Length: 530
Image (cartoon, rainbow, N blue to C red):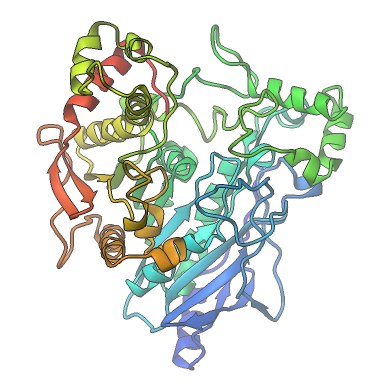
């Protein structure tokens, strides 16, 4: 990665030092490339939090690729989360932050079993969601302890968000037109995985057996990493939770170029933001002024409720990391040929215009009658309910099946899921499992999410989900001893694992007719949302 400096460490030596520490009775201390860390043990798990994997991206390093973290002397306490990345918290976020956000935020966390393993352990690396404007590694529902208890070394990290993570401006392009531009948050993700590759053996992890997984924006990030040349060799398996997988609405957005009929380039958003804070011009003076802006000014009021603004564009096709949308990449045969788990929730997120049945089904064109039959539309159908079903299928559910079909067709092991389980306390309020509600079950952190309302069935589903995800990390197959078999996906059988209120059940997709007609309509229109 041009412009990115990384301090090389001797992985074998670090692993030997870590093993020596365990043998001497000091299992809470490890040596990474920049210095020694002291973690904290609890209930059979040792955690190391707030580990710098890159230099603070502040001052002259704002809107630059991540640089090498500084070394330290002595032993650094790694018992508390560092700051999550700068953002305006979203009040109704299902995963509220546990720290105060700051621009200095490029830190990671590691959980591992306290007992020394006989061999290298599988590694899981979590990428949080939040629309690329919210999110962090500190929420209680993202605690990696339960994965560590399953014999997994678990890693989470922060990446830059909002205008800190995704920003283009002509003054930046002039400085390094052929360099790394725009997607600084994605650069952070790759830098974190490179750090894992170099250092995870010191924690007992296997750098050759890394599984990346993420939800929503984190799931889209997994698609990006599967297709990014710079991420090649950094992971062995991938899990996409509600990450879309089709073409983005509006067409491709580039850093500086606008295609006919496509969205304005990302630099247009950057210029509009600069003008809104009184900065004109595209020269070095303008860039200096932008980098001197207080972090709160760069952040503004941007979050998941306010992100639809001409002052922010989000991820862009940069020609180095994000080369195309997932649909284009996969259909062209691109993407790492690794085992993949992919799925969505039964009441996932989606956006659809239309206040009548006629308006909702008009976009299906020649497939309209087929679509109305698939969705059981009658004169008594509730418009709001039908709109939600159409939107969820178009944005998350059908794209997950699309990805499963394309990847399976070229011989990759693929496992599809649908998360339909609703916590007992929410069954009167939720018609299905909303976006992101699978996370505390996958992490088995349902106690942190539901507290006194937690039911025995919730705990049972969490244990099952955790087992499947951990099994996949260990072997590339989510099925394991004592678990219901999870068949590999094929278009012929169209089978998935459905996490129902009666337990996980492998079955032919019950929404096949809905998804078939959605896929037909998407193909005829040439675009779909994520």
